[in-house]
Length: 108
Length: 264
Image 1 (cartoon, chains in turn orange, yellow):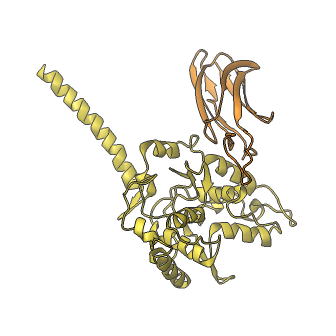
Image 2 (cartoon, helix red, strand yellow):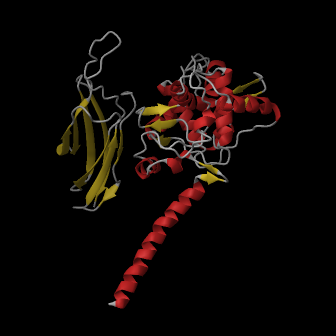
Image 3 (spheres, one colour):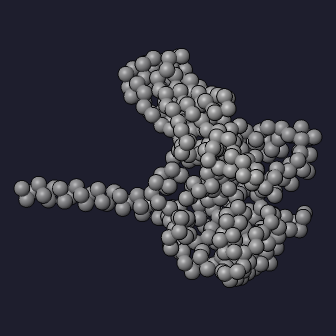
């Protein structure tokens, strides 16, 4: 599933100092590391363990994830619109890969 | 004081009226005569999740399907778009008529089979396997172009005999517990299971089931039901599976297409 693109929703415009809601989802199986395969071997854990959102390279929101976060996690959060630019989103996987996407915003 | 209380009562009445109004609107939107879509049996949080285009996890499949629609594949170097153009206009309403009798093959086919026929014949590409991410994505994308339009599968003419077979498949007891589809989705709709048992229609498929954590086809749902009935599974795209698909689609005739719907 991880090949599907992450989706983000950021308002196109905002006034300076406004609190805006950002919504994100990513398709990911989130293998918990608790399951065994047919031969009784433990299926290695493969979950997204970190999510970071930054505005023009400056981190504005971060969250660490553990087991029990659902598959295809949906996350929404609020940030203060300080300046125009690009929001960058990065989901870090247990196997080291990082899924990225970005979205522009114009602050007036 | 009396006036204040009266004022509060009016406000409360208005509030209640507002809530009842939204419920009524939904009830009208998701019913047709005696038919009630599975949407009305869902809990409010599941309904909210389905209604919000972004929060609906099925949206990712629809987007992926849109990309596949315009991606060339196979020996002929064609994509769906090469022949069918812009899906928003050419695919509008198409999915409401499937499963459909195909005169060239002289058999009943569903959307998934239609996609794979196009892939093999026109695109000279490999068919997508049943329940694969790609096939679900394209199916959901195509059916999503008919979102809100009433289901309208043909049950007369060349489809009449398939419809009769489908009805029989739905009502015939099978498996160790001697149950039929109709034992739950017919006689016992409204009872609680994981989700409340619905009337057995397919206007919302492919559906994102929270218990699957993925999108799934109506045939996958047949598999789940048959297993809990202790009955033999139907192999994908066998004739019995497709006639049953026609029958459940016809049970939903008149109800709006909800793809991708969200259910527990």
